[in-house]
Each structure stands twice: as C-alpha cells, then as structure tokens.
Image (cartoon, rainbow, N blue to C red; front, side, top):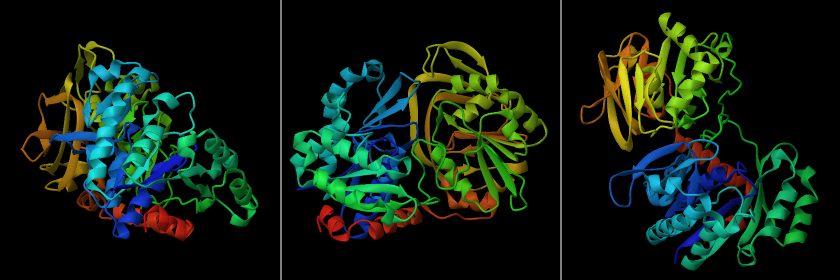
Length: 495
C-alpha cells in the first residue's frame, strides 16, 4: 500500500511548492522511496521530462524540482495536467506531457470531467512505483464554488485514501496576515469525508518572536482539534525558484540595476506579460558581483551591460508589448553600441527579422510580423510543439560571448515556432548537429533553455560557481526538520 502526504494551502502562494519540495528531500534523506504529484498545475514555467508513452513531455517546474529533491527521475505522471496561460481567460492544456488543442478549447467545467480520469491514471501509475507520494494541492481545497470539479485537491485526496494511508498538512502564509482565520475557515469548509485527513497547520514565512503567536495556536487547536505542526521562519535566498513570481531567493525585482562598486555586471531581463520559464535565470542572481533586475521600461535599462529577452508563451503579443513600451528602440540602441543582447527561445524569435503565423498558433493569426531584425532569422508557427532534452555545444562564439565557445551543457527545448537562419553563423548545436543558436555582432540567440543552471556555463561566463539546487533542497529539508514537530513528521512519513 502506498502512503500519501498531502500539502494543502489556504491560498495560492501560501508555500505549498516550497513545503512539498522540502518534504520530498526529508523523505529521501530518510531512505524512503518518494515521488511528488500534482494532478493539475497552472504555470508557464515548464520542464521537459520522460513521458508515460515514451518520448518527451512537459510538466510544471515545481514538480520537476520536487522530483530532483526526491532523488527520482522526473516524469509526466508527476503532473499529468499542466495549464499554460495564454491570456486572462484562456490556457493551453498539456495532458500527460503533450498539448491538446481540443481540450484547450473546452470550457473549464466541461474539460475538468475529462481531465480528472487522466490525472487519476497518472496518480495510480506513480503510486504503483513508490512507497510514499507527496501530493501538492492547488490554490485552496476550500473553494466551495469549484468543489464538484476539484480533482486537484479533493479528488486526489480520495484517490490517495483508496491507495493507502493518507494524511494532510495545511500551510498558510502568516506574513500576509489573517493566518489563523485562513486555517480555521479552510478546515471548516473541507468536505466531511476529508476533514479528518488534516493532521497539522504549518505557519509559513514567520518573522519575529514566535512567542508572540500565543495563545493563537492553542485556540486554533481547541476550535478545530488540529495542532499547529510548526512555524517556518521567513527564509530569503533559499535557492528554490519561485514557480510563477519574479521575486524569490535573491532575485531583485525592483528594476534597479545600480552602480555600486561591488557590481561588476548588470543584467536586465525583460518581463513582458507572457514571460515563461523565468526560473532558469535564478542562478544569475547568485553570481558574485552580478546585479539582476526585471525591467519593463526603457528607463530601467539604464546602465545595463546585458539585455536578456526570455521565453514567451505568446511571442507576437510580447513583441507588441515591447514596441508599446519603447523597449524595441532601447534594445536596438544597446546592440548598436556593442552591448550584449541575449534571446532565449521566444526571445530569439523576437530578435529575428520576421514572424509568420497565418493559423494563429501563437495567438491572433497574422501573415507577417516584423521582428527586431537583430538576427537573420525567420520563424513560422505551427501546431506541433518541439519538446526535447539534449546536450548542446557552443562553437565559434565571439565578442561578449566568446567564453562560451566549445562549452557543452545539458539543455531543453519547448517551442512552437520553427526558426530558420536566413544567413549568419550558427554557434549552438544540439546532439544531432542541428543549429539552435545564432550570433550576429554582440547579439546571441539560443533556442535552448536551462543554460544558466549548468556550472560549466557559469564558470565560462563569470568565472564563478553558485550553490547547487541540491544544496537548496537540503537547506529546505533542514528548515522543515528543525521547525516541524518531530514525532508528527515521523508519523506523516510512515516512520
């Protein structure tokens, strides 16, 4: 029988991913065969992993990191349904790692009835392979308006109960205020058959003297019969990428590059509305002497040494946004002056001469859209998404990117458009020798994600190393083992 430990939250952003990742590493360090699971995630931060049917597929970055924390191979069964927002009212449905156009067009309630059985299949396969599943919920399990369709929190809990012993923790962000009310309200609104699963509350991101919480924890337990399992202090710089937000672990999101004496390199990452895979830039924020800023206006680019155009879920929309902000002209001026410009995936497509999307796979249909014309490339969007994890090799880079020449690093590709060079020199190739990166002058464009997560790339560019993800996982696990009730934690893990 498989044991399940569920991490629910009182809201989005309460710390579910943070706590689930830490618990995966705690369990792995104690010798347990553990794996993460989230039935449905909503994020434009995704990773390429192995699929149940073979080949490659996408899952949310949070479950990818949780798998690494659990010391198991990431797999699409760990996140069977991924929703990638394409606007305020639309999202692409990725089912078992592959985008499904038909499901993406269905209304939310209708498609939930189809997604739930598929997610259940992923859970059952995962449960058959591991002795402990750490389940991350989504949002809150107390959204009573969504309860009939809530397979992510309520449905998964019932699948877990059918598979074996199941318990749950409820995490809340006490730094926001109202934590006790959030915990009590969530407990009160849980379905009767699931309320008994709740074994403890976790007060996350606490700052100050823990004694000031008294007598709140005791009163909460009197009201609900559930104890406070622990109080986790606010820990900045823990090294785990934020799933969706720009701010975490030392990333400077104020848009100020600064000119302090200690700052040797100022890197500006553009933050358009449809930014994706932003978590790959976290290592830059940890490089000594490097100042990283997310920018949204030309004024914020002042003093930048590098300008980075990140991935995008809607390239045409983000390119239009750049032009409205006047950032297109600022990027051109920077490149004309010899300043380094880097485009990653969707950013490469914006840097090219033109975009073509007559069927609207990237958003609204268009025949021809001019790019920034900083690289001799053209991109044609189609229905097929390229998903691949492969080693890549730089050859012949020059100028500000010369240090990358001959560097080999693991990387992954997630892209819809087919990008081709009209002229110029390819400087990055995948393991099959296909060109996936080009340079002209000081402008470099790569279709590969995840390069800055590789020590060889950081060493080549900056002569520096940063703490590894594995170190971050152990830091989180140490935090949980120090601040959660030890006997309760042992029982939750089946020990």
